[in-house]
Image (tube, rainbow, N blue to C red; front, side, top):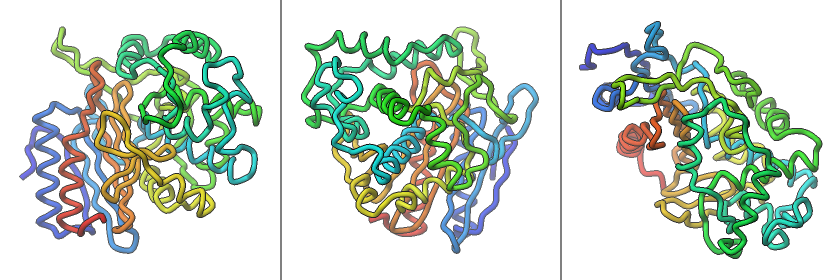
Length: 359
């Protein structure tokens, strides 16, 4: 049975009741063992059913229960939104995948060789800073002013000797998406958030998804990070969106991400050839996954995970099962180690054992 240590609620029309109960218990046990303020999990297959389970508190001070409809920061899942918006622009002839970066930033090293496709796939060869180190600085100063793209281009461009040839290695770094956002701004005169809203959020009617401009998070949920010095959680909810930008700024909730993951995994917003190319993955160095154009791929799954101050998110779609699932945890510590990974493991194992193979 679910431990009485904290609030828990759920519903199930997808799995056998014994399977759902076992998954409930495993999630609740992991939440307790790993000291997670809250967890929200949902799995849905249209016309077959849905499993939803939440445990813990959205706000540890007010003891507001966690629910699946509370908006949270989705971190790098933003990249899937940004990539889709770029690909829609490509479908409309506004951009081309083989457009070189030199069209907009000619003085940047290798700009004549780095293409939009290289940036989407994080295969640009740009020696961007280690994301963990960058995120640690942001963790300590989440309301600091974000450096401009121009400043970042100068700083990273000075590392000319460390650049690698484009399209030779996939190295996951956020800076690729900062450049793409700058290109979108140059071409359209609109910021990347406006373009994502117009091309992805509004067409899919994602009513709780937004590209924020303010530092507050709407709704009841708070994001937390454990402070080993005090033995308590620090509230890490407030955040300056430009610090994450096109690589991680979007706010959404579980139901909206379920809808988006299915649209992403089916290519609902793209021309068939564009979608097929987006889903062609290449190995991502240091991981067991492949990476397409703004999407992580492998073993029949596609989607994205992300970490940002106070929040961890996993959003995936399994094409063979037509199944979407989302996991949200409102804790991320300074080490940037995803707190949702153990839950991701048991959720995927349950889906595959109960519903069938993904490939």
